Amino acid sequence: MSDMVVVRKEGLFCVPGGFYIDPWRPVERAVITHAHSDHARFGHGRYLAAVPGVGVLKARLGEIAVQGLEYGEQIDHNGVRISLHPAGHVLGSAQVRMECGGEVWVASGDYKVESDATCAPFEPVRCHTFITESTFGLPIYRWEAQQETFAQINAWWRRNAAAGRCSVMLCYSFGKAQRILSGLDAGTGPIVCHGAVEALNRVYRAGGVALPPTRMVHEVEKADLARAIVIAPPSAAGSPWIRRFGDFSDAFASGWMLLRGARRRRGVDRGFVLSDHADWPGLMQAIHASGAQRVIVTHGSIPVMVRWLNQNGFDAHAFDTEYGDDEAEDAAADALAGEGAGLATAAAGERDA
Ligand SMILES: [Zn+2]
Ligand SMILES: [Zn+2]
Image (cartoon, rainbow, N blue to C red; front, top):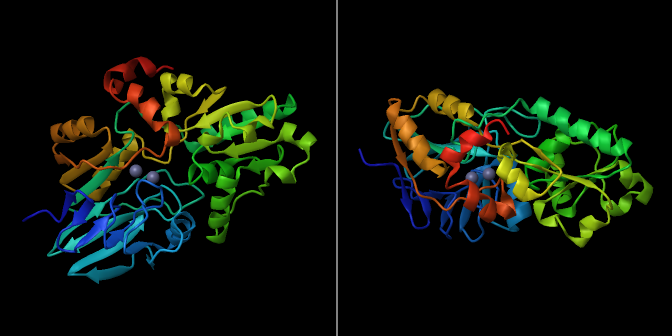
């Protein structure tokens, strides 16, 4: 039987269905797994996305022709039965299940198996072929339970507030920021959000996600900023906007903060390890839970995961995609240029960092 999904220059293409999944070039029909910019691009004719993600898509892409599909709801398109299932990555993130002629393929998009308060938890979906991401696809990547990380972030904020210093947390404005907000102890002080973060907060709240009260910087008395935590995108680092917070302590939250080199390059006071992607055990858990014999690996540690899966009884292959790394955002290029290439070997030395 020929493959149900192949890579074309526009993106992942469902052959019998005649539609694309997260295409990187403009196409007529696009099924979108989630609204991070490398997966959800402008210029497609029609979009299909999970209902909880439609608000984010519109907030980021403006007026697009988008149809929302409830999680688990099925539609038929050119003889392919399509349904979307929670991926646990960000609000509205979905795995795409495609069934045709008794064959089932699932494209994961980005996913995380640990559930959190800001989106529907990852749902294992049985299939013959599972297309998985591999952003943190090396055995060294193991996350602590998020409550541990939230406790560390709250302790850092409390110490700064006691010392009269503002805390500045840099993180991706869509997904990571809201997850951090959901874990903050709002009793410590005011929570100030950069405009880019607040725009997404509004979409999350409209989608029924509970977040603590947040304020824009002009809504906070100058004296109160000394007890505040500020949530801002990495692009705000070094900007005039951020200098107003005076002698602040800064931090960055990302899965890459597990690596000493990545922390050093960021030049921040603290690195908190918090990822919206599955760690190595999470990737393995999801792959096993899919029941798939055939696994196709996309963006991340492709060669390592393909080799490991083939050595462990799977029929593993790779898809070359143009998806990026939402954990690194604007610093992806320099952070990964150094870390990515020699990671498999350098990682052992980073483990105890
Ligand atoms: Zn993503
Ligand atoms: Zn991705």
